[in-house]
Length: 294
Image (tube, rainbow, N blue to C red; front, side):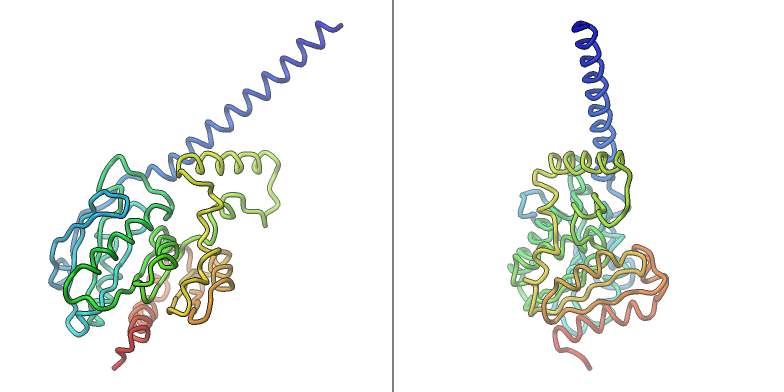
């Protein structure tokens, strides 16, 4: 009897161990799909849109070199808007937004995502991308003719902007679009009625991501520091179907913050759903932030 009970216990433990191993293997695969996105697109500058562009490079605060393009503004050359790369996009992905700011007369800096700079570097959901953005700020601080710096970023770039701005007072205005409020919250999705296996899998994903990012996912949470951007102006842009993050960030943000909820828009569809208003809101926000309205 004792032998049979021992065999049964061993079998149960074996099944549990197998389930745990499979769960963490699937979590590793999922995290690889999330963090392992390859560099996408060419290293294009605003010269492809009819604006002057100078090829530049600078070090991230993590040490690797990032390439990009600097365009001098026609009306406000002393004010530079950094357009932060989103996802694993190269500079081409920033051109539409950079052109909006260039049309408004601002200087712009766009640069490649870390995955384009070095294939051994990975997308980190905005966590280490914030260090790349801070490297861009350092570069502008040392460049002649730059008096003011604004930042605009979408998705991973928006998260990077929200994480970097509280650390860096040289960032005087921020537009953050579509970034999450809390990575841990997005993974665990506690407001949904999920099954037990789904909950277990999400906890495994959180553990694996914490390991691969080098920090607990609970620390990748712009919602905990977004209030430190105030009193600097902050514009949050979110689609109607991603307001769970936008609403949390806006509630946590301090004075000087604004939220544009784009009706009918999904993640990143803001310029598709409302193209004219999108351009107007981005340019007028920076004009108001730097008091250069005509």
